[in-house]
Length: 168
Image (cartoon, rainbow, N blue to C red; front, side):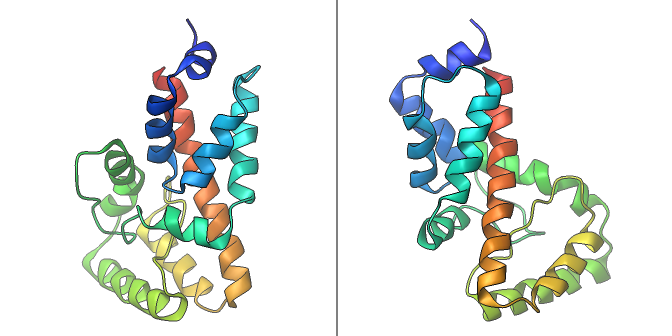
């Protein structure tokens, strides 16, 4: 049985757990699961992208609740925590003490300004690049930043969903 067939056949409880590990907003997982069965992998990913774009802001905030501050190591042994550590690992390896300290300060300023963690698709980015993005995004208005955060959450959820599919 291939990944597509396995995904379509997952029992509801296991599918829910897999999807929550991809995105902690239950509405996202519900929307993706509701589209089963899928004809192909592209259909699964398209449904995930659509579900991400249709999340309400409270749903996005719920999704953010599972993300540690950028530059901080996710705690726990859950699949989501392991993925978070992997996604941030390259950035952590490229940071010097000064950049790390500046990123901590940027995180605090961002949280004070917007009321939630700074979320960025960190895979493949250095901490210097992430710091530059955080500083730039501090100048955004609320609506602009909400749109960016929603899209960053979408990219992370999609990467994680691809990992789920690759493991089936």
